[in-house]
Image (cartoon, rainbow, N blue to C red):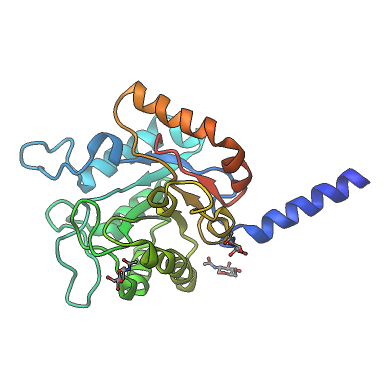
Length: 256
Ligand SMILES: *[C@@H]1O[C@H](CO)[C@@H](O)[C@H](O)[C@H]1NC(C)=O
Ligand SMILES: *[C@@H]1O[C@H](CO)[C@@H](O)[C@H](O)[C@H]1NC(C)=O
Ligand SMILES: *[C@@H]1O[C@H](CO)[C@@H](O)[C@H](O)[C@H]1NC(C)=O
């Protein structure tokens, strides 16, 4: 009886701590373009590897046809360098028309038709890390709405080209803006990685309330040394990182 009451209480407290958008109750699994494909936009000379709708369609086919989806790998995530260098006439982000001729909405439908989910990338700041249009504080609402209109399922918000004050405003504001669209969109915050990843600079209580997922450490490179280095960091800081995680709020190892 005592144990049952205790379990109930802890389940309740997790429920109130986590971002209440219903998604990512278990750790999200899937594929992200960055580690392997970076900002390769050279589709003329490197059509198989460039950041284009074909790449994400290919990966979706692999997840859906080779058994990955059944194991839970359902997210297909676009990273940087997907967009056009210009916003459209209404101030909205738009996909590069040559590399994504069908547009992001069509790509999201392609995923959904196969039981998969689409993730997209943006940056809290004047530019993305790769130099594409960023999401400054005044653009947060319109960008959240654009992603919802496209039926995107997850959004990674990077933090290049903004300072700590802007990030402190922008990350919670985006959480509110995504919620206001009415579409449940998993929210992945790179914020802690820009603050050294650890308390007291990073407030994991707050992060758990506004984000489903967070980035705390460096980019993974294509080497075992890099994997080890990241695993070591998580091992060394596990006392801080473990209590921060729970249903709806997870650390995001850029390994997937
Ligand atoms: C928005 O937030 C409210 C309150 O936390 C929650 O009940 C609702 O499910 C959220 N909606 C979305 C789409 O995230
Ligand atoms: C952060 O950037 C904003 C907008 O560019 C600027 O007004 C502010 O002074 C900056 N704050 C710090 C601490 O650098
Ligand atoms: C961390 O954020 C929580 C939730 O917003 C807040 O209650 C708490 O005071 C913050 N902690 C620190 C040390 O700022």
